[in-house]
Amino acid sequence: ATLCGTPSAASADQLFGFVVGGFFPYGFENRTGGDVLVENLLPETDPFVYDISDFKGPWIGGEYLIGFGDWIEAGVGATYYSKTVESFYADSVHPDGTDILQDIKMSIVPVTASIRFFPTGRTTPVQVYVGAGINFYRWKYSESGEFIDYSNPNLPILPTFRDTFEDDGTAVGAMFLGGLRAPV
Image (cartoon, rainbow, N blue to C red):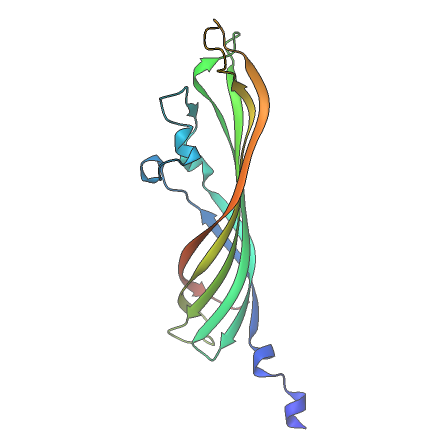
């Protein structure tokens, strides 16, 4: 009768958490070749003007965690990040002198599987943890606005057109984490 009245260990040791963090992209000099954020800034063409650091921003999300004793926890989670940065051509303007503008938007939804170790235990008032995991990043990138039509470079004034260019995909990456947690 006592066993029926007590929750099982698995059902009693589950947590739901709210996650707040930030996206801090590498700067121009630390990015890989072929990266669209770098390609847009290269002087071989009429580059866009923006700063990669403008894409820094917050992310929010949640996670579901299961404890295994007092020292180990495993979980899954998802977060969301989205930021739009305004850009313009560095060397070209409209005939009236106004900038040729684009909005560059990046959205990322990381889905995470992680494991955490609690050196001071999971039941202390403030819980210190370190951990590792894997992220599956679902991303979408778009450029929307006005663009220069380079199809006829002999024209005295190159025409512009409005359009949206999009790409999306998935990437995988390792995750290392550490922090403090206080139950509320």
